[in-house]
Amino acid sequence: MKDEIIVQTKNLVRSFEFGETEVLALNGVDVDICKGEFACVLGPSGAGKTTLLNMIGGIDYPTKGFVIVDGDNISKYNKNELNDFRRNSVGWVFQFFNIVASLRAWENVGLALEFQGIKDKNQIKLRSYDMLKKVGLEGKELRFPSQLSGGEQQRVAIARALVKKPKIIVADEPTGNLDFITGQKIAELIKDLNKQEGTTLIVVSHDISITQFADRVFHLRMGKIEKIESQIESISYKKFRE
Image (cartoon, rainbow, N blue to C red):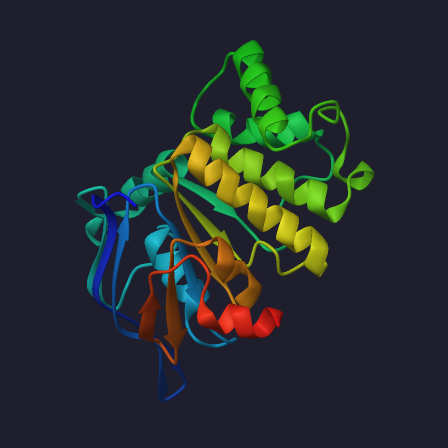
């Protein structure tokens, strides 16, 4: 694992108001993630996992504290700067894939490049085809999402996240909408691509089985980091498997 820190949160707080009630989704979260690392944030529903990911991925602003990505304090960005950050520096992978039903596989991947401002259609197509090959979808570039399995649709989403060569990839429950075996294959794919591409990967999940693929596991509960495991296969996963 490299020791160069690419993502850092310090005393990160995010609160939401519901009438007269204030709910703390994050309550003083400190996280350091190294360049090229596969980091997994594990916790039950309501722990604050997605909120943390939204802070790191530039979707939302913290109430207090800050988020630094590759030396820049993105918590101080205005909306236009944050849009540019998401467009160029972050690849998102979602639980429900979020691919466009009317577009073919390669066109879905190419959307990320179009949003970056690339206009050369041949370049977009070549890069999209190449990335689909890397995620194991060679020969399926012209298929629509309805012609792909759930696992294949998630591979398209992963290719879309990777094709623009972002600084970080953030994945919100990437195996949550898949059966166990398919989910394991996707987790293995993500790990392989993490090694091959050297892209920093931050995954949030409630699925303990995904921790076997991570370099470090951050256990989040009730908006706070309870503990950090620095081993690839956690003791809890071994017990789960047995």
